Length: 121
Picture 1 (cartoon, rainbow, N blue to C red):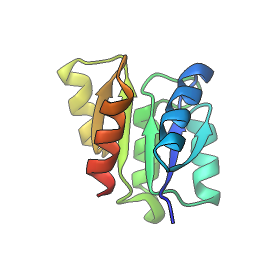
Picture 2: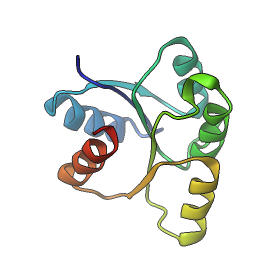
Picture 3: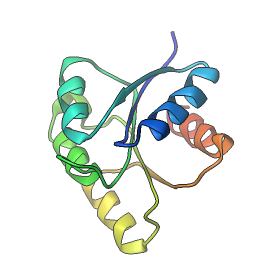
Picture 4: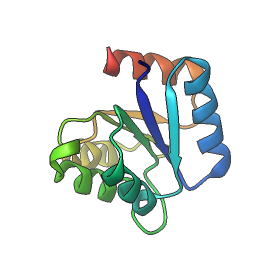
């Protein structure tokens, strides 16, 4: 059975790009338009990995991670932040919230897949 991954991004083109890369590599892919949308969907269904943007309306990536880490279903599920932000302070904030990894946009599909494979095993 393939691993299920949710991509959370307010950019439709980025959601589509990440999903296309994941589907081509044999993963199941689902999407959400922002942190609030993702949180609602994740409370209704379990996934194996979450890839989230940092800056989004309604609920940003850090807020989403904090909410998910407070849920017993998502306390240990890996979460990758995929963002244009590369400042060390932001990375530290992501780690403190419970992020597993950080990928800076723009990125190559191979970079995304190697990170996903490393995390999912």
